[in-house]
Length: 105
Image 1 (cartoon, helix red, strand yellow):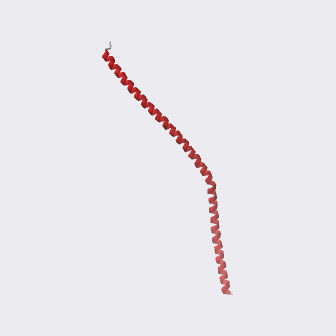
Image 2 (cartoon, rainbow, N blue to C red):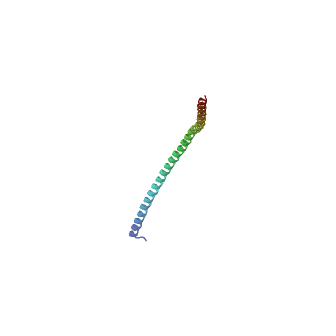
Image 3 (cartoon, helix red, strand yellow):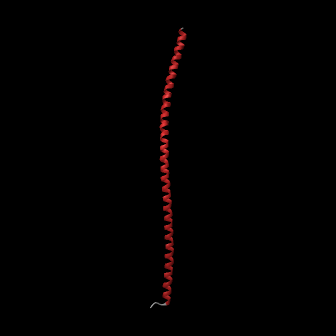
């Protein structure tokens, strides 16, 4: 038979085990809550990243026509530069011819 002191000792051990189990359960619940919160943050960040990706695509789409216009503008400026150089050379030739004609007259 089990004596009273042994029963009290077993009862104390069981109480300590129950207390420890309760603390462990509280810790596990805390970890679960933390994991849930982390998953919520990951979900929010994922949505934000997706929104930023969409915005980037919108910006790219709106800047592509501007980029094309700038390329065209660069081409026009290049053509004008060559035309200006050509006109400048022709004017210089005409001025030299005019100067020669004055000297010959």
